[in-house]
Amino acid sequence: MLNKNENTIKSQDSLSEFQGVIAEKVLPNEDVSKTYRVFLSNIEAISDDENLLPILNNFGLVLNLVKGQFQAIRPNKLKVGDKVIFSLKGIPPMTMSIPPQVAGVAVEYIKLVEE
Image (cartoon, rainbow, N blue to C red; front, side, top):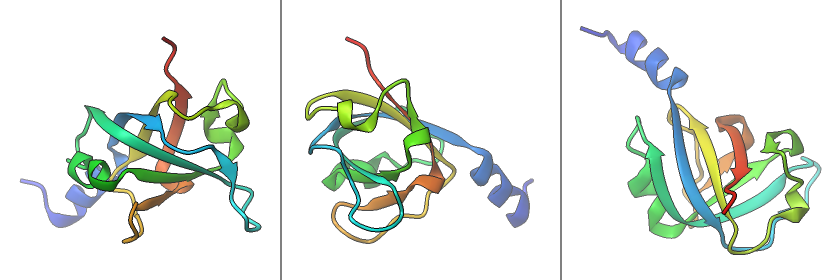
């Protein structure tokens, strides 16, 4: 039987993977963080150990990412309608806004789905 601390450690180590569609043009955030705002819709779970899909799929999701998290593509090359795969670490902290926003610290990567 897991105690509370072991369960927390398991959640922090888990990695869930999702597919979504770029819903708005990817633009740099207008602050000093040097991050990019990626608004996703039509999110589907590939693997969802933490049962996050119901939260992510209601209103879409905004990921705030640094350049290094984009695999094999520059952020400004993503277009509305492109499909991407992204991963979330554990239970990611997110805002209560609509759509919810996830900080890049909770995102392992984002990559373009080649069709």
